[in-house]
Length: 222
Image 1: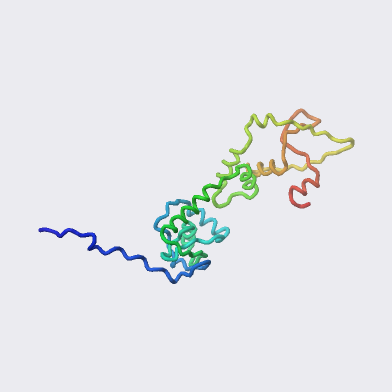
Image 2 (image 1 turned 60 degrees about the horizontal axis):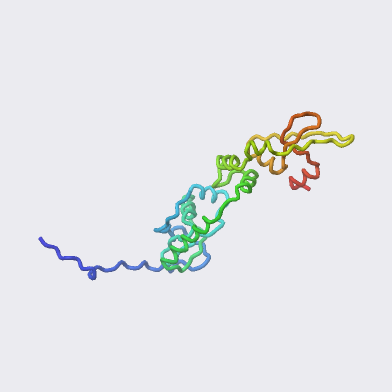
């Protein structure tokens, strides 16, 4: 039995996808069923974290959709998270990108985001104040605080400031109890705690005497 060779010119080329003319260009709200994830998306991320973010904050940026295919160019994890939550509609920005431009837009969006970095000390200060958020759980915060904490030798090298009472001055004290490392870091930062020694004792500890006016300023109640 013999078979005829297949001549490439005899094979019909794949038909181009029909334009999705039902998707208007620009900023629109689309039905989830009208769009789909990109078939080519080299980006990998945590959909679960995006789900948590949507639950807490809702949608605060649009997905970008290619009009000709209905595929998501930017925001694939956002789309998948919304689908996980059972959303029926989502805010989108529909563009008339050809296939190459769509791929370039998606890669560029992720690549430019990757150029950003964290100022770890400032991030630690912020997270110590606000606590866990989607993307940073308590374990992440504790590890960050441990990284930015001064080394023991650095702490020992801090200067000691004597607490000296003025004539006829009387000190009353308010004790603040920290239950977590996050609270302690926030307290050190906000009150600028330093190594001080009481004029009545030889012991040295982290403290800082502040006036009521300064306390009100720190707490934003001035």
